[in-house]
Every structure is written in structure tokens, then in C-alpha cells.
Image: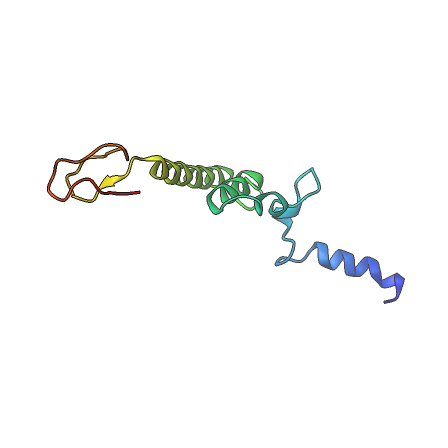
Length: 111
């Protein structure tokens, strides 16, 4: 490639709406949001993405509400993971693994 054309190639790459959209590359740090979020799970990555670009593409408050939605979803997911297992006897009780259920068919737990 002719060195005189390199500048045009770099400019085209930087302005690419698919590979490097402006609202992802405008952060003062000089890095793209995906460089951070690809190391997170889906919910946290999306929350960070919406905070990172808040107001860059449209309504800042809408972006922040979307971030909160993903944070709430992640909190619910984590709370569900840490909840005690439900009894397989369908007694509607939450038991720990060292408890025994008195209901018919009790004593087994789904974790």
C-alpha cells in the first residue's frame, strides 16, 4: 500500500459505523468501551456500555435508565443464585442442605 494512502485508510477505519461507531470511540480515555466490557458478563457489560456512552447517541436519561435495568437484572440473577434451594416435595419451604423436610417426599433439595 502506498504510504500516502495510509491516512485515508486510517480515517475510514476510525469512522466506520459498524467496526468503530463514533459513540463508542469518543471517550476521553481513547479506548473503546468493548475493551472493558468484553471481560464482564452480559448484564454488567451492557450496564457499563450504557453509562459509558450516556448521551452520546441520544437521551442521556434513557441510557442511564437502561444501565439501571441491566444492573437490576444482574442483582436479581445473583440473589437467585444465592437463595436457599427449594424443597422437591413442593412444601413451599426454603431449606438449607442440612435440614430435613417433614413433607411427604421431603428431604431432597434442588440446588
